[in-house]
Length: 132
Image (cartoon, rainbow, N blue to C red):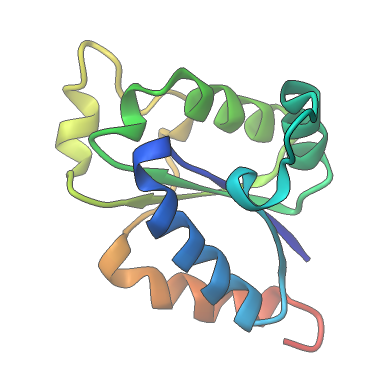
């Protein structure tokens, strides 16, 4: 089981903690700040990692919601029919819907969780991880 973590640069510390919790339940993670090295051609690597993952976790914050790459990554996951898990922090879904005329886009209809409920996601993931 492999989980791709999508986040904004301002949220790297939180994303690292999320990756650690996911790995504790037996899943592998891809997190750009941990897994892309200097000199890597990162755009194609990110696309390949999403395609090779079982699911994508998107950390939606006031910073990341304006990051086009977060939405690109969500779109790649959606296009490849991956499970998409949206985790909010520092904002509500109403904030996302009112974000500069944006909104949920392809996330419409998906179950969202707040970061305060991240342990619930980890418990659910543990059930999906073979031998988890």
